[in-house]
Amino acid sequence: MTEVTTPSTSEVLPDDSRLVLAPGRPPVLRLGPGEPPATAVRQLLSRHGAVVLRGLGLAAPADLAAVARALGVTPMVEREGFAVRDDLGQGVYSASRWPADEPMCMHHELSYADEVPGIALFGCLRAPRQGGATALADARQVLAALPADLVAPFEEHGWLLARHYGEVGLSWAEAFRTDDPEAVSAYCREHCVDHRWLPDGSLRTVQRRAAVVRHPALGERLWFNQIAFLNEFTMDPAVREYLVSLYGPEALPFTTFHGDGTPVPEPVVAAVNDAYATVTVSEPWQEGDVLVVDNLRTAHSREAYRGERDIIALFGDPVRLPGHVRPGASD
Image (cartoon, rainbow, N blue to C red):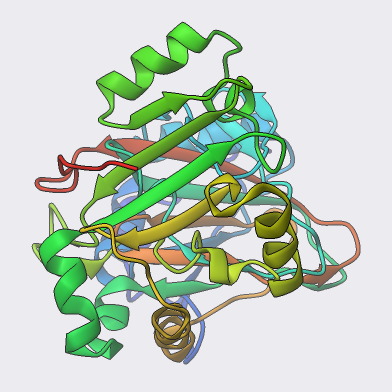
């Protein structure tokens, strides 16, 4: 990034002329190259849950790390990822490796961990020719859009995530960033993840988390989970049926349950995804953009796309939410 004088915070407030607000789109704050004004960005996050910073001149992973420092964001190491990422240094990762022709459903980053990112930063090094936007959904609005009888059992019991690290999907070494089984077991014990090593060397984990949480700063109730995204019914039906027939249901790379262990039926997954769709906003990527997201208040997804797309990410400001980690998970 080219170093120039940054506008003072008093000059770039949320009602400044450089702030673009439009229906169906997140706020866009236009800036010159240089470091973003931290106070203004935090104000926008509090008000809107996300903001696109346009004009910073982001050109390399180190630039996203510099933006994080300017905003006072403390990076965190990703563990338990659901797709492969490349570690680019200084807390910056590549986007998840996901087929370009398949959209990625709405989710909050690492909402199944015991310590979750408070903020997620995404930077655009190369914008795709078509599609590929990182769409957003306000977790307060999603919760309000869901039927009360769907929410109630999740709010009472939480949700379970069951994962199998085997021949299909992410390996446990990739997810935990170590090839030492003892280190993985120690991590699981420390982070309230029930785990079982199988005779073939694969790993099965189960963890129980809250599905509805309160924002630590705003106090508002949020639909905060990956119940729909990581459910088996989100998989291509032909792929799911093939895997179940070949390996059995417990060998699926992931699926979700109600917190009391009962299955999440396909209509519930569809209803959750429909609620996300009703409140989704998006802004097409431009090269050099930085998207700053309150990861607790705002879910994100990824559209299918054509052409080369190079998005990088940094997750930070780790938070432990009261009541989020719940005992009693078992498989």
